[in-house]
Length: 172
Image (cartoon, rainbow, N blue to C red; front, side, top):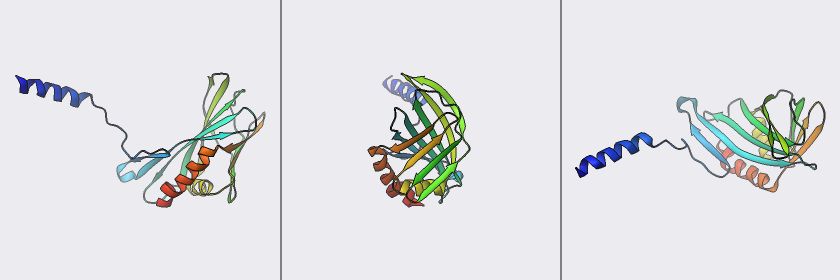
């Protein structure tokens, strides 16, 4: 009877346990093994602020098969008093990099407390992303139909950039 009880418990437990992440997780990024498609990397949200009340959160996803793939997906949330439904250009500037991107896709706009969160996805060449992260004097300029916003990384984000350069991008 006792053996039957343990078999029932074991089978119920085996059916209800969900697998966790498929890869290594740390404070800055996560990895996901994709079999013959390589590895997918997810860089956790990086915080930027402006001189006004606007804030920006950026997370990044890209793949590698031993070397960087062509394009990284930069997902940006802009928190501002006004809804932003269109980005004309977004420029990533650092000491050694300037990349102006004119294509973005609005994912959603939703209220967040007393602000709006406008979420966009933006393609960026992976090699440009690597150089941007490894550089210094980071800045993001966003031109919308109604305003120009400038964001600089928070102190924690600068530390995360250093960690990404050493721990992640040194692999390629």
